[in-house]
Image (cartoon, rainbow over all chains, first blue to last red; front, top):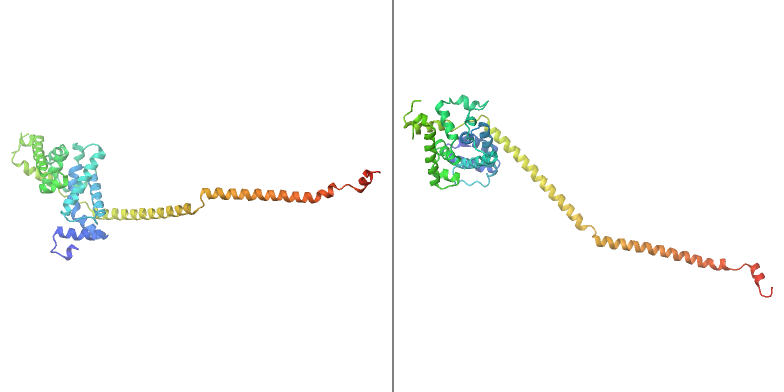
Length: 190
Length: 121
């Protein structure tokens, strides 16, 4: 495992672990989940606004990863591949719901959501940001989450969303403008 | 509300979003492995079910293909009926034979009748 070979980077170790997962190694899968689930749940929480739904979707992402382990080719980083699967699941979730999570209520802390409550002190400004991000159009929200929260390059975001890089740049620019407009009480007019 | 300097907008945006960048869920890896094992068992059951169903379909197909056709059954039925009719006919003929053997005896006039009916009596 990774402890045995400290020279391997996370990406290289992911490839090695995926090969083991393809052979049915559950411990390798456990290590991949342990390494990637926090960012995945964070991204999904930002997208759907619900901790329970985010965990449910993250679980589905890893189940799909396990199913596709034999077919997986390490063309991209595993973390990017996981976000790609997650994004598709988010789109399906919105289609299933027939609407998008645009109310502040859905972004409020849920009962029993101790992870969010105890780990973070949500300030008034943070809540305002969360509400504003929730009001963004779908593509703008996804793009701004991936570039600012997940710190992904434009090219990766374009690959995940299946659009040209120019569209990603446009959505991010519009998202920033829209956020400044929604938060003008804090920052003044854009 | 006092306006904050526009400069920190980007910084605040990054800070607000980065707080939710990673949400570690205790025991999540075990839950995933449990779900994967459950799915693996479910797939095994489905695979064996489909194999058994396929085998059963093959057996039924072979039974159907090897069983007598409708024409064959009709021919056998006709043959049986014909044989039965033939037997009945034979029985009748046999009975007739018996009757023919008996006929002379039955038709034979008694000696008294012959005497009485003889010419010149």
